[in-house]
Image (cartoon, rainbow, N blue to C red):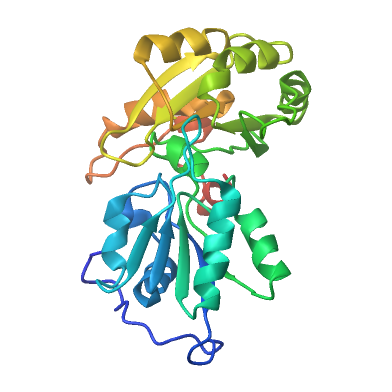
Length: 298
């Protein structure tokens, strides 16, 4: 985001900006952590903010785009820890908008993927406020991508499922056995958020419908300098996490595409004649195939 070749982020208010004195609210995805993954639209929204309500998993480096005059309120929400009640956050959003502030609700990842963005939008609309939504790069995508592997691949996975590893208080958790059967039959990659505390149940439940040697990647702090990861299989998921002390926030990826991690690492050590990496046979395709063929690989 700081590269001088990027367009200036000095932005004019959008055409549909509210009248002077009228507040507004924008839900902004801050991405998985690396501030360079912040979108230009998100940076522009931060520059216009007068109040920022910031989630716990948002990297402080992202706040460089906010004006020095902006009021920053940390409303931490982190799985497994004491969090600011959701109802309080929503009332605070409403209060600030009604006071005429330009509110940015800044969330890690994407607001609409396990970010409770849907609940907040419904609340604001019920009070006559139509928020703007700016998507962010979700951690479930950034995690495996950071290891050089895709989430979908025509030889290994025909789709991807994003799923939470736990239910809301009093709710019922995922049916891992049913999900495993579906993933096996439909050749799907499973991307599990907030699954650290449920690793044993995930391993046992998915193991009833997927082979025990199904590859698994666990990525902690995806995209950040302190990122750590481990590659294992479904049967050894809990033991691997315990051995390597992989804790929240971590993404768990289950599926054959995880095989591509080792192949990508191998390819990165193979440099072609012109200084280009030779990705021949990486994840099952020929680097000499046509441009059209390679472009069709998800």
